[in-house]
Length: 253
Image 1 (cartoon, rainbow, N blue to C red):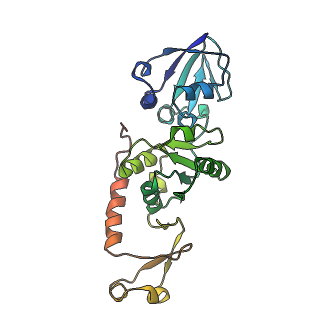
Image 2 (cartoon, rainbow, N blue to C red):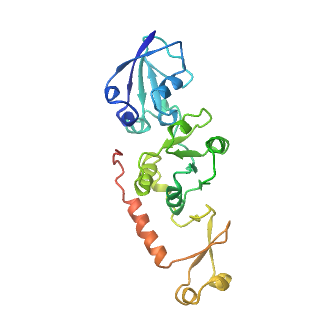
Image 3 (cartoon, rainbow, N blue to C red):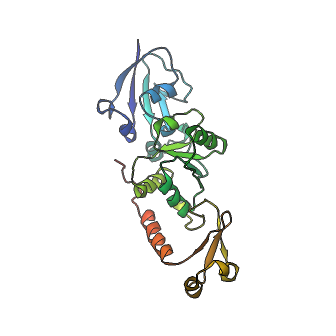
């Protein structure tokens, strides 16, 4: 039986058993698996890994592990803080476009409210999610570790929290999206772009009270849903201010 010693960044502790955290531990294995397969056998999707050092060199996921290797695995957060960007296996996605699994409908709405391009369909299968993420180079957000371990998924993040408001904080922090927020530019229902329109253009679709008290309107280019700055808008605006005020370096339990 071959053996090696491996240590994971503290940011990855939630994937590990207690005796594997914050220390270099011995791991036994058969044959010479790829380092991607070995890491995922320990429960960590490859999409969570930013860099891997074997002995004195950085390697990619195709590296075949050898007996007595000394391995260090880094998270994106640790690489960002240490400025070792040239060592990244998969740089943070240059264009924050997402596809979300069936468990993240509320998170989808929140991200769209912040102006991010998000695909979501409650009937999507895991296979379809992985295929679309790969073909369209989208970031796959999921609560399913197995889905993120699929080889064709290049960009992804395992959402930790069950609370949608905490989930949005996670995603904003993971991909450093604070400067990309563009509130109320996408339809929260269908992901279409919102464009300004005149009251006259949508007058036949408004209730009398809405037409009397509001003058600014937007319409979705895709589903034609009309939006205006009513009480619902004010509640959403307060919610968005809350999102934008989350601590930038908060820890996720």
